[in-house]
Image 1 (cartoon, rainbow, N blue to C red):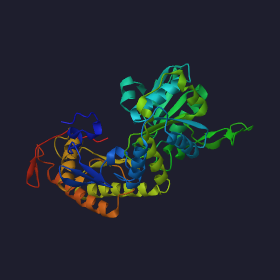
Image 2: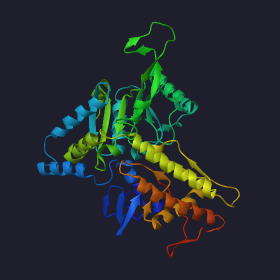
Image 3: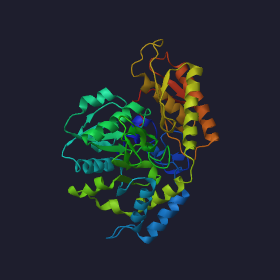
Image 4: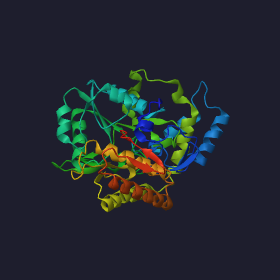
Length: 414
């Protein structure tokens, strides 16, 4: 039983072994067995592959110099300067170590900038915000947003992209309402950041305004496309390639009000995460981010191909860099209650029998190669075939490599 408290790594949900002994590039060793990771890749943390030699070297060098003192490490200054280079607005950066706490910090700073004390949210932005039970609206649903929007709302928290791309109309409405009602926009880039480009996904979003290069149009109803610039952006996961680190980047006038609240933690200033982030960003800057798209798209095509071949109904999301699918009910095959979890249990276990870690989520990294995808495709073929052959079996009793699985685990991978 995994008592570590991390949902996505709980063996009761993902079907994997609870612990690993070694990892390198796209491989993980569990219980003396080597597995190819075609799943969540450390929950999206390891774009450069596990156990990256260059990042490790920088971290080890920092350790030898000392990772903690009564002063802040010099690398914090360098990283703050780096973030200013990446963002084309004057910004201030604060550092933490996990995504959940960073979202809480961001929310508190945002609330410090408004007299309106309500915040609303779409998507998932960490366990701390979940426990605040903020009012939620559906992604890409303007009517849902209108239902929770009122004169007391001072902050909108937006999980920028996960299951589908944001529509132009949805983002335009958020932009307009934030501008009109002086609402602080906090964008969660923890999952998406540095997976689509060198920076946040928000850089892909353009809205219309009557301001062009800082000059307000004098013509009625004249609009210009402008890049979305959130008030606060939160990064985590991929920015440090597996080392604990997160950042809150915000417009200068917003972040200067952070001191209105007591926001502090001793180990936010340790050196390892900062150095790991600096080196990771240096290496990511040299990468072609189209590669992550192409790898993810190739995996989505594998799922589609197997679904058609074995007539197993699935739904695939829009986003190759954050690819996932869901098994759908098929009325031709009896009781379809909880069918996604039942089929996913088989899928995960068949892949394990082929020495592959995988589920209904695939996060691509720069170390995934064609040979890995060929191996994954062969395993997917076996898995979908097994599902197809067992759809009329009430208890989903199957045999894999001489061991028997009689489980209906509630397998969910996030």
